[in-house]
Picture: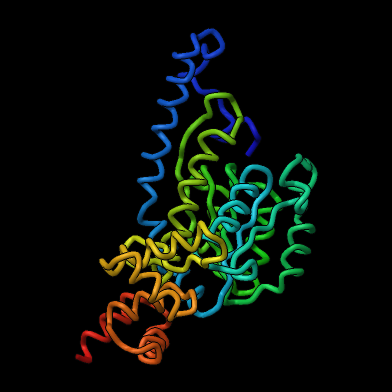
Length: 302
């Protein structure tokens, strides 16, 4: 398939006069196109849910969540992995992103890197992939050589392969164990896939990673309980999370956090079960750190 035959590279007839529109009309055109993104992603919800259900057991058992891509797609993957670390108390070994051209490609364009399958294989060899890992490979066109080669190499190692693209039947989609393909159509500015395609990828990655975090017990109710109190801001956030989760006072939350030595899930279980530190630890150990299951288990025992 030639470049001009790819849907994301074609001209958008709804924006052909955008250069002559008033500023208000211009942003209106962009906004109307952005609304198409959410609808395209909505059509992929079953595929996204299936990918989460396949991925979270592997992550729960120590597998890593690894993002791979080139250019905008690669940067969005690195960003998602980086944001997951402080939000859910993960380490840089549990989730990270690989981008064609390495860290230099995060701030500048390295055009030839995305065309190198050999570079993809080298990057994956460096992280010693295993069959427990989850690889999320993203490319708007679904045909970027670096990304397609990376996904194939990952699957050859037995890793779970999730493929994001904005083309329904792309090489990446055909290769992936779980293809996710929101068809957003031509961009407002022809070929500028940092726009709708980039927005679609951000939405999908948000769903994937958030779903995996929820399923692996990093969320209680709708609270990010794995926040690690390391400064005044995160300490106050931790107290607030505990107080809201247990419907108790901030003072009681602070005392429980101190008893739990700054372990937020442990503090929540401590308050909700009204037990000892040892009992709360045993409940969390028995439920693999899932607070909701630990509290339920305590209720069943009583």
